[in-house]
Each structure stands twice: as C-alpha cells, then as structure tokens.
Amino acid sequence: MCGRYSLTTPVESVARLFGFDERPNLAARYNIAPTQNALVVRGSIGGGVEGVSIRWGLTPPWAQSLDEGVRMINARSETVREKPSFRAAYEARRCLAPSDGFYEWRKTEGGKQPNRIAMQDNSVFAFAGLWERWRAPDGVETDTFCLLTTTASPLLAPIHHRMPVILSPEDYAVWINGTPEEAAFLMRPYEDNALRSYPVGARVGNVRNDGPDLWDAAPAQPAAPRQLDLL
Image (cartoon, rainbow, N blue to C red; front, side, top):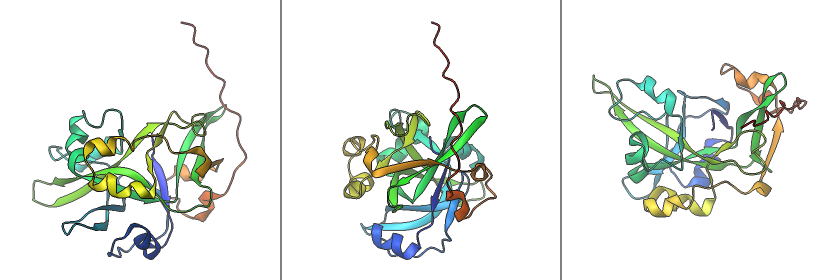
C-alpha cells in the first residue's frame, strides 16, 4: 500500500514535466497524508491535461460523507475493474499523482520502521491514480483521488508485500486517455534498478511533521523474526 508520500519539487518544474498550464499554490510537502489535498494531473475538457489539488481518499458519489474516503486511499490493481467503489473511475477518470518519494513501514523487532523509496536521483515520477467527484447534500462538490497498488518488486518485498503503481513517462498519456484494456497493462511493479530504498526516522509517522529532515537516513533496525508456517 502507500500511506504517505512527498512532492517537494517546485510546481513550475512539475508543470513542465507533465505539460499542464495551471500553477496551483503548492508548498514543498515531505509528508503528504490521507485526507490532505495533493496535486494530481488529469485530462481536461480541451483535450490536454490539467494540474489540480484535490483530496486524497477516493469518495464514491453514493457515499454519505467524505470520511468514507479515508478507507479508500489505495485501490488494488488486480480488482479495480470489479469493485463498485473504483470501477467507474477506472473506466473514465484515471489520473497521475506526481511524487518524488514515498514511505513504507517494515516490521522490526521493536515495532515498525519507515523506509523512504525514491528514484535514484530523487527525480519526480508519477503514481497511477483514479479520481471521483462527490457532492454534499448542500450541493458543494469535492474531488478526491486514490492511488493504485500492485505486488511489490523484489527490492521492496522485504519491506511490504504491496507497492504503488509507478508509471513511466511514455505511459502517462495512455494511463489518462487510453482504453481500460490499454491501461491494464501498465499496472505492474516498477523496475528495481531505477529505485532506491533506505530507512528513515520515526518522525514521518506523525502527520504534523513535514520538513526535509524526514528524508534523513536512520540506522536500520533488525527485522522481525519470520513466523514459521506450521500448516
């Protein structure tokens, strides 16, 4: 899964990379968390793409409140075309979520230790996402999104059995505008040689902490003993 990530690159640079004209007021974010707003890139009415800041945690149109989106920050790629909460968005409202790193927690002898995963050069990449529009009883509309996940690559499997779907730049247009069948081929683990992973401190676990020190490397803690399968 993916429960925290970062986007610290200036919006002007992100806009050039993804080809949108908007300049949303986005500060450097080292610890983006569910229910917070974050940048997504999606198709626009004019046929291009737009960059907008919307709420993380996909809320289906029939939900009673935005709070239901807290349970849907991620969608499993294997079942996204079947689940009612995600099916319509997968068919028609796919998006990109720019990022320059994400965090995953590995079980250790003392609990769990966060690890930061990023490109080798800390460059910006894109998660595969879905977005939806939810209308409150008073008519106010809120756009929300989730991230797709897939089986972890060999690099990340010792940390967690799932990882977010990361897209290559040449696949961005297909993910946003391609057919559901074309998009399905893109939901796979990203190549390990482009990524790096290292342990960081526990401060990232608190959503109130948000600064460059969250990227600082920390000593690796001993992994939790593997439980034997007695069946």
